[in-house]
Amino acid sequence: MRKKRTNQNQPPISYRQAKNTVRAFNIIVFALFAWLTFTSTATQLAFVIMALVPFACMYLLREYKGIIIYDHEDGNKPNIGLACVIAVCGMVIKIGSDYTIFSYTLVWIYSIVLTVLFIIIFEKISQMPKDSLVLRMVINSFYGFFYSFAIVIFINCAFNSSPSNYFSARIIEKYETKGKNSSNVLILERWHTQTKNETENVKQKYYDSKNIGDYVDIDYYNGLLEIGWYELK
Image (tube, rainbow, N blue to C red; front, side):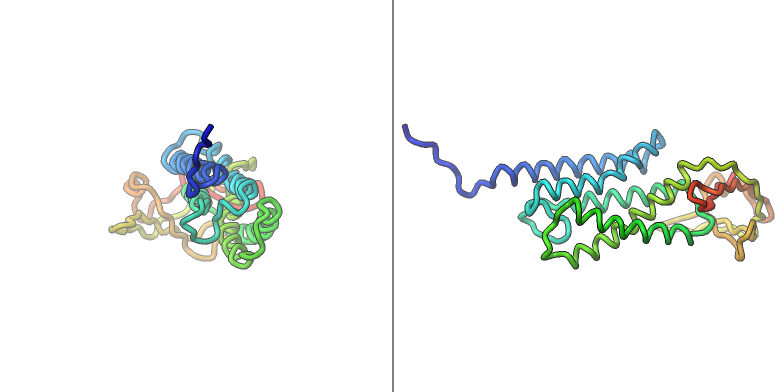
């Protein structure tokens, strides 16, 4: 019986499997991004799932070692870098739209510590080759910081159990910016322990309901990690 001839140019099964896995993974991450940024349903759950994306990336990099990449361009290999970028962007956008931090000092400290831990965990789990260590450290430092930044704010605010403290602040100026990135801005007089006036970007409906000289109500929370945050009412 004549043996069936195989195509020598056909990629190995592991490569095809890795490519399909990365494609499916990217689709899932894009779906999570849409869920997190364009809906208001169970977004905290979506955030938690999105926060697991980096660890899923580490697992895939280890399982398909040398086949899946993320730290440099190579058109011949599946690149999981896009999923990492989309995940961290979705997390940062979410915490930026939902929570307003009073002072970022502790956020920076926590984020730097977590970034170092992130790099160590990444190297331990993913078991990446050492030949691209420097480039990978740079990318992980950048990605890890913004990932940690979002995680710290989310944990502090979403799991806050402290009661709210009431403050009020007078509007001393308001204006709209037009163009590609239009915004509605209120300038609030100093309140609580602030040393300068506060600039707030608000939604159109809220902006239209306020005039210069009006007072806005503010709910202030201490936060789970003792990082103060607040909401305009």
